[in-house]
Length: 140
Image 1 (tube, rainbow, N blue to C red):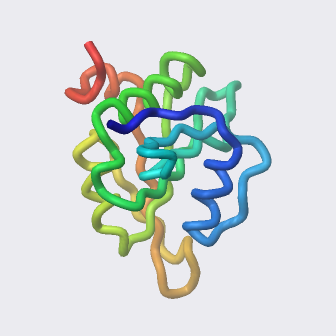
Image 2 (tube, rainbow, N blue to C red):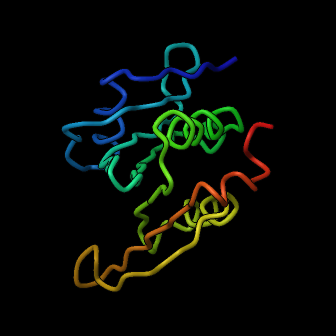
Image 3 (cartoon, helix red, strand yellow):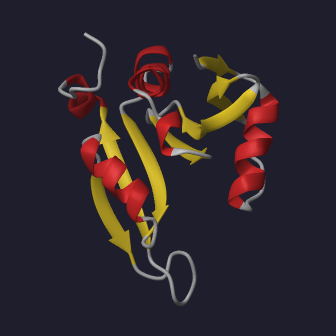
């Protein structure tokens, strides 16, 4: 049985390392862990409390890491604890799995040409608190 682990800075570094990006200076992580092995994690960062906007970056070793409980924990933290009104994801145009997940979760997708360089577009996915309240993934 897996467990949800929150706020461990090692998890932030694990996500950044696996994605090949720089770690965040300020962030909060939520991971799905089984037998002391991280299955996958989300890092909440670039939080702007004055506008209620936060970004989430995620990485998983296996698709099963993103359980319903994990989704409810991550989005519940952003919307219910922090009081965010919008979550943003930045997704490569080539990451079909994450684009499909974002669609299923109710995100709106906006393609920005060349945002990842001359030959790669980036998709900005946004989810409002209003849309989250209507989501089938939200705990009732």
